[in-house]
Length: 242
Image (cartoon, rainbow, N blue to C red):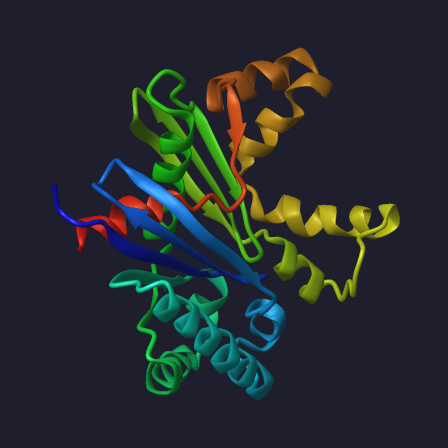
């Protein structure tokens, strides 16, 4: 039997950066060892100015330097570090990636929305297991909302909407807890980002029969399972590259 491999995954999201470390005996036999959430909000300036601020550069270098030290401590030999919505929209993202690589020794990659959806989908499927395959997966993050409709493990529809917690808080200038009055102000921004078939589906139960019939045709009812920022999919991806 071969020796286990220590692997790691880093998710640089719009609201925080997370590190997970595991001991992999095989692609299917993985033992979680350590996880940490680092409070680095990459989306705090991007969704307004489309650039990482100098403060984010400094905090980012500090965060990834810390993660690199933790990975070295655990003897990590393979890892994957990805950045999502906020980094995709930052015009100075290439400079940010270069600085992280040069000063921290971490190769951070900005993944596409399709790759982000795939990782979240595989994580949800793996978490549920073969006995309970999901019909719909919803992943709400800091910068975007991922919705995937599946049938027999095959993707029927997939959409990424520019609706996220950090995006709404920064664009609507909400500094902290979202109170009822502020939540009402969020609704127009959220609704405008959602395609009409989804809005019709959400309105089915409180709308006239004719509209409900239209919604049922456009977007039939599904058994919804929600997974917010699920990460187990990184294990299979990382181990496959080992």
